[in-house]
Amino acid sequence: MKEFDSIIIGSGQAGTPLAFKLAAEGLKVAFIEKEHYGGTCLNTGCTPTKAYVASARRMFDARNGEALGIAIPEGARAMLTKIKERKDALIQKSVEGITKGVENNENITAYWGEAKFTGPKQVEVNGEELRAENIYINVGGRARKPKEYDAAEPLDNQSILQLEELPEHLIIIGGGYIGLEFGQMFRRFGSQVTIVEKGERIISREDEDLSQAIQDILEKEGVAFRLKATCMEAEKLANGQVSVTVDCEAGAPQVIGSHVLLAIGRDANTDLLDLNKTGVATDERGFITVNDSLETNVPGIYALGDCNGRGAFTHTAYNDYEIVAANRFENGHRKVSDRILTYGLFIDPPLGRAGMTLDQAKKSGRKLLVGERPMSRIARAKEKGETDGFMRFIVDADTRRVLGASILGVGGDEIAGGILNLMYADAPYTVIRDSVQIHPTVSELIRTVLQGLG
Image (tube, rainbow, N blue to C red; front, top):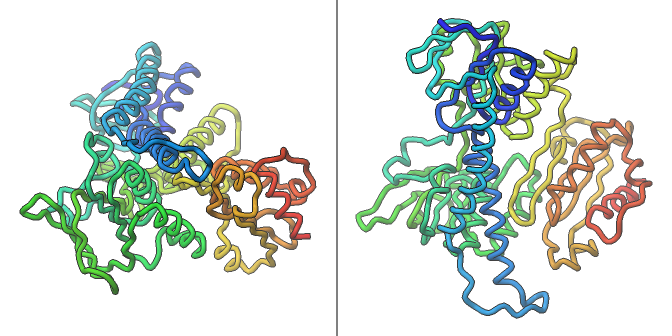
C-alpha cells in the first residue's frame, strides 16, 4: 500500500491544475490517467472541434466572397487530412506541456491505467494499491451509444475527429450543441448533412425563437433537418451505406447516408470506478452527488468536472478546481451555487448565453424588462456582412439586475463575457446603459438595447 496526501483520478480541466496546485503546496500526489492528459476538452472536445470550426470558416469565406465584392476562383476544397494534422499538432503541443510538467515535478507520481476503488480511501491501479485521505474524482464522461445504433457502426465526437476522408452524407443523430457544431462544419467541408432530432425542435433548452433562428441559419447553408423522429434506429446496408429510421410525421421514413454520428448526450464515467466500495452516492444518471464545496457524502472524497453533473463544461470544470483550491488553501468560502450558468454554441455565427432564458424568467414570476435587437439592425454586423441572429437581454424590473442574455450573432460568444461581468458584480443594467463603448462594434448596441428599457 502506497500512501499519498492526495489522489487525483483523471487529468481533465479540474484534475490537472489541481495536481500542480497540491504539489506546489508540498503535498505528495498520485495522479492517475487511463487515456491521455488533458481530458475531453483538450483531446476530443474544445481544442479539436474549434480548430475544425476555424477551418470550416475558411471554406465558408472562400465560397462567399462575391457578396463583399471579392471574386474568388472556383476550386476551394477541404483537405481533411491537413485539417486533422493541424488539429493533432495543437493537441500534441498541449499534451506534451502537461507531460513535461508532471514528469519534472517531484511531488507528483503519475500512474497510467484505469483506477478502481477498493475501499473508501483506497484505489487500485495496475495492481498497485494507493491510499490517501483526500481523493479527487475527475473522470469526465463519454458519448452515449444506445444499442439500437450498433449495427450502423456509428461515429461519436471522438472517432469522427479521426476521419481522413470526408463523409459523402453525414447523418447526425441529435439536434443538440455537439450535433449542430459538427453539422455546420462538415457541411462547409463539403459533406451532405442531415440532422435527426426526436424533439419538436433543436436545442429545446433554448427559447423557441432562438432555436428556430439557429435552424434557419444552418438550413441556409444546406443542412437538412428531420424533427419529431420518435422511432430512431440505424443499420448498415449491403452496399456499405447506412440507413436511419426516423418515423417522422412528414417526409421519407428513412434517411440513407454514408456515415452516422451519435450526438445524443454523454454518460458519466463513474461506472468504471467501483464506487460501491466507497459509499459515495450517485444520482439516477450515474453522476456523483456533491455539496456546494464539491465534496461527496464521504468526507475527503470530492468529484470535479463532468462526472458531478454540475456543469459539463470546461469552464465549470476549471471553476470546480478553483473552488476546491481556494477553500483548502486560501480560507475561501467559494461555492458551486455562486456561479452563473453560461455557455456557448460555436456554430457560425456563435451563440453566447448567460443566466436565464426568457422562458425561464417568465416562469420565475418576476416582473421583467426585455430588450431585443436583430443583428440586421447593427451597423458593425452589416459592415461585416454577417447579419444573422439577434441579441436579447432580460432584466428584473424591480431590482434592475440582468437575469439573462442570449446573443446569437457575430461575436456573440465574446460579447457574453461583458454581461457576465455585470451580473457577477451584482450591478444594475444601467451601468452598461450609461457607459461609453467603442464605435463601430457589435457590443456597443448592448447599451442601445438597454436604453430602450428606461
